[in-house]
Length: 422
Image (cartoon, rainbow, N blue to C red; front, side, top):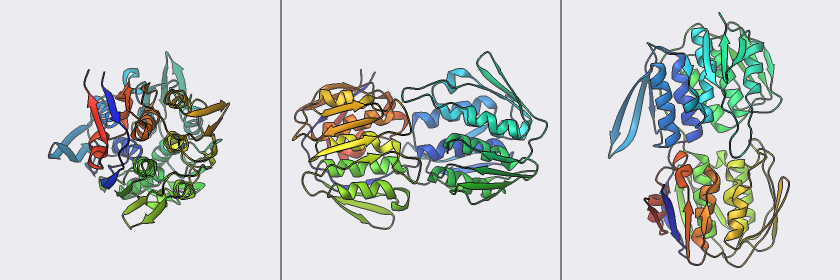
């Protein structure tokens, strides 16, 4: 099992290019199930979760071709014109919850689908009841048999659906299902994340009729058939935010190419409050450090609030900031596991339920730490960048799910970082 070794104390400088969005890539690739026509996608990141999605789609009968340059996939073509399987097995769904998104497209286009329930995960339970409730309201018959959701419907019908929570996954699943339903579907309290908006954009390019994606209420007028599409993926806003935090932590000066300020509004506001200089340069964001940053309070909320996926990174920044920060996690009930590892590095952190009270220290010290999930992994790397001595992060297979070649990108900015193969 690989580990990452970081020798702290280097100021980051230069430019880094953000990869395509992981959280966009997965539903966009899955949306190819809605048409028999070929779909072409550019800027798909080379990540484990993408590989898992492609394995799942291949198992269903989707034909996949890759074009690559310099060893990196630059375009994927998918065609679901001869689907041979309507079941998503447990061994794939358990490793990546986004696999559950095949339920809506398969059911809407083929009238049936069998998908394993994903179960819980390290950062929280994230139940799929909102997905199933919405599909039932659209006319689906759903049974839970031996850990699998078995769904059937001769035809889905448009209806009004209210989501108790603005779930990204439920919004995406129901939106895809509604594109081929008969009549009009209205999803109220819908998720507003940029990845949801991008999926709607892709579906509209395929011939769907989706109105006001990215708002509280999304309206989908069903059509009989969808066509192919060619689409270039947006940059990953969470990866972008991670490199911006890295620059702030190391008192560096870094330009993050591909980062969009309109996707990171609430995060950038908090970053500016710490004292760093943030400049919007069109298709890039520049951060310039200003010495030791100030502590700020953070409350995670659904978009456009502060993203939960950047909470762990900001905790690393607050661990060495001047003052006391209160971080409140409202999205996932178990997303402070990185706090214990930061404490091993000298962080002064106290947990009180869904709140973490972080009192900034002058410096962290390198240690051997254990990654528990994707964002926790990268927060420990960030901490290692400013820690005195050497930090070794174990179980970094989580990293490869969401960060494309992170050690090479950080090395390009001047970090002393390497991957150890075990």
